[in-house]
Amino acid sequence: MSLKNPIFTTCILLIAISAVHAQDSAVFDASKNAWKLYYQDPETSQWTQKIYVQQNAISPTIQSTVQNIQNQFSYRYRITNRHDAKQLIDTFRIWGIPIIYPTPNLPRVTASARNDSEVEDKQQWALLLANRQFEKKVILAPKGWSATLRTDESANQSSFVWTPGLKDTDPDGIAPGRSQDGFTVMRTELPGMARAKLTGSTEEPWGLDNLPDTPFWRAQVKLIQEQDYVLVPVMTPVIPVPTPYNAAVLARSLREHVQTWLKYGHIDTNTLARINRQFDVLIPALDIGHRKSAVAAIEALIKECVNHHSDLLNHPVETDDDHHAATPIRKTTTPASATPPPVFDRTAARALIFNLRYIRMKLEL
Image (cartoon, rainbow, N blue to C red; front, side, top):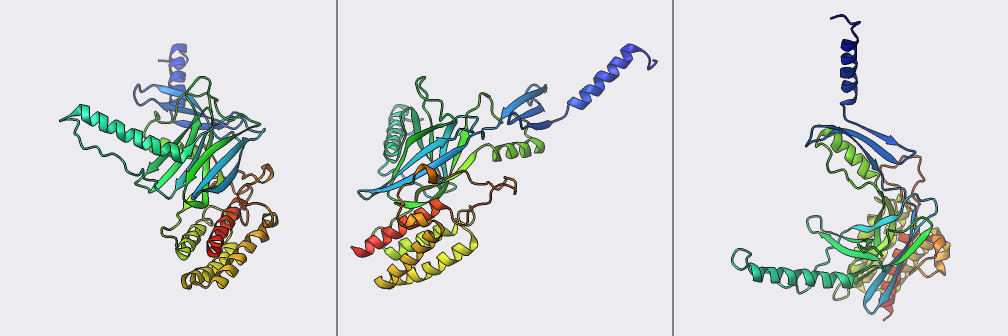
């Protein structure tokens, strides 16, 4: 058949076009902050194009407040979504806390669904209610939001999660230029540092779970998910107070936690080294009950914090104002040209001073 035959030529062109388009691709459109995904549907084998909008077009700051209230610590968070944001903040999660908060005195499930399904249902329901009652005492939400305490026992981690409620009258999130407070956690642990993970709301109803299970798409989903949120440092309950109280044990736990700050960019190597030298004085002094040496080491540690944030000398470290609210930190996937982390994060300095003053207060009792 002649190549000049128009029908033959059209067929060749259609085959060529199909060959070009029948190929997995993921193209990012920076102007829309969205991915154009082209793939073969695993169920229908049809080539499909989807748009996935990243959930990171938010501009959050967070104020962390901690107060000692009758042998418990109240942690409160105020979130602002700055005017330059393009999305509402619809998820606030403090993740990766290396503590599991067990529900005390849980009712046991002893019945078998096979032998006595009615009793088993009642016991499961009692267990669910007990967990929920405990959860409601630990994590509180502002009006129109829901709060959940999630635990991952395999990773020995807990997370606090807040999302808008499900009622039609509930908010959709925190709009650009607006603030929301009332996110609260009640615990007995002293403050340490964690990273809050925040995401923005999008209109796209579908996720990334229906993509083909291939090396290309596994790598692409990982890339998208690594950029699909914003991290902000916060104070949160991390450091257990020993029972019975032991100042040296508490100081060791505090020192161990401070070591993690280097990995997450809350402190630089030189500052951490100076702080560790003072801990090397403080802990032995507490072990042998040498109060004068312990207080001197505490004062030296507080001075190290104040050297980086001079206003903390007279500013209450329990709370902060809008000017000093924590801002997003650079993730490992962020380009190196982004703003580098501070020498000593202000929120971390506040947490350290709070704990040191707690130890000093106990010494004075």
